Length: 231
Image 1 (cartoon, rainbow, N blue to C red):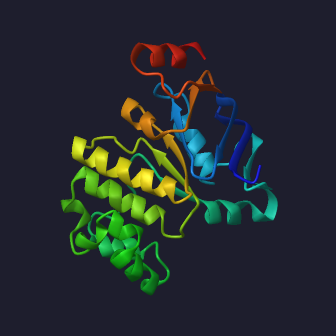
Image 2: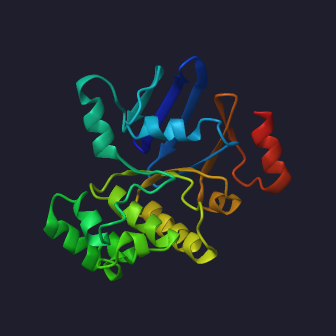
């Protein structure tokens, strides 16, 4: 039980009169990557926004290490536990990579240490610091976005379609970093359309009709499509 870092129980959420999520439940342990699959518009991004604390669910509960995210400590728990990488990068294109990172890192000495010997070096951001974000490739921007999301050393990393618009090299680089993050004890919630991403997942949930169902993590191709459509 002490390994269960994140528990999501019966989350519902609506936009105006349309109920998008009708009872989403899932769990993730320390050192696990959990994949979220489903068709466009099924509610994957809505779920990640809720898990990042950017949107309140209509009902349901979220627990981090057994602590329920509600009341006066709700915001504090989301800030403490989660780092969010949205599908569209949230970087400022006119600034260079270092200045974008400085917007997220309150401690400049800590930032410098991470660039020299920590996870930012592992992401190869130390070699990009002087480059303007507007000049970066899609893969480089994604790595900077991940670097920003990791500013507070969050134990839970939320990623929404991290492979979108990336080339094969960029996809592999990000995938390798996520494996390293997982091996260090981090928990990953990964919404994806990429079958190759499922290779690093320990569990996979399909979202269909506003509900979630755990499916075989080894399913691929037509078998995966059938599993997503059935549930």
